[in-house]
Each structure stands twice: as structure tokens, then as C-alpha cells.
View 1 (cartoon, rainbow, N blue to C red):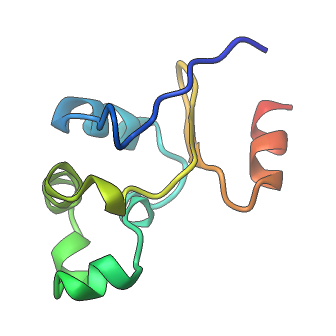
View 2 (view 1 turned 135 degrees about the vertical axis):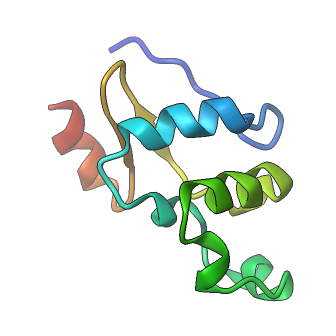
View 3 (view 1 turned 30 degrees about the horizontal axis):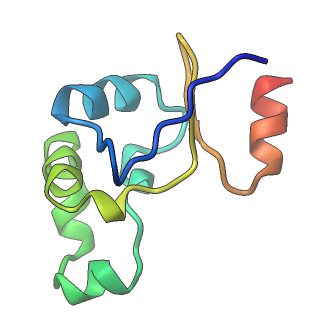
Length: 91
């Protein structure tokens, strides 16, 4: 299968790209934001990532919080965790 790999740290998605992904996303949009030590260090809360606008704003400012891997096709997108989801999605 042909694919394009994008390294999100070197080439972070801009706001428009994030909105395009969210529009295709089969997962809840808030799942795009990692809830890890960086999230906690930034003192972010669930209330900071409830809406699409909030999610896009947080991810544009803090690209390291983008959940990955993301698998995006022309019409659909998923968060590829666990990895079995990717096989099912592409199968």
C-alpha cells in the first residue's frame, strides 16, 4: 500500500490540517490530545480540550500532545492505537 509518512514534530500540522483530520475522524476529537506528563505540566484540563476550536488551539501550540499514530485516508481517519485498529481500518 502506498502511503505518506509525516513526522509531526518536524512537520506539525497547521490548524486547517487538524480541522480536516477532525472532520474525518471516527474517534471523538478530544482523543487527539494525549493526556500525558506534558498535558499535566501545562496544567491543562479536560475543559481545555472539549471543543474542536480548543483542541486545534492546544495542538497547534503544543504539537507534542498530538496522539499518534494517525491514519488518514481520503474520507476517514482514526487514531491507530492499539495497532490492531490500523489493520482493521485498512483491511
